[in-house]
Image 1 (cartoon, helix red, strand yellow):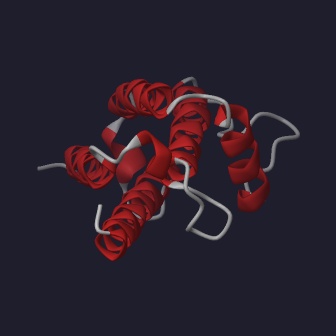
Image 2 (tube, rainbow, N blue to C red):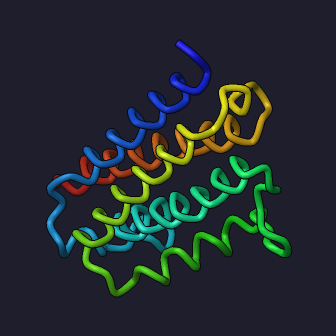
Length: 152
């Protein structure tokens, strides 16, 4: 297997675990605040937001452009996360999950279009996928623990 195929497989696996962790949670529980100031709905919304934003990063890389547009700084993670959650606040859980799924498909398509060398250790694509895999995996574990505590 190649670095690219390994990265995509790891991403797919982490994404599936996140979806399974959030599966069949009643609507009223999806919006219950328990993760700091967030709910399961908010966790999924922020992941969907990052999928959308970072798909553009991969598309720019594929065109030979810098990963971030001029004037955009991805280092303010809390600020970006807050914007993603706020943008989806009024959306139903079903709509957030649908966006999460379509965002992941676009993300994987953009990843797949990159050349193999972009997945070498330390390269942008490899770092982003690594962060996604760890982030989704961590969120899935948090949701499962919360569900167990709540008896959901």
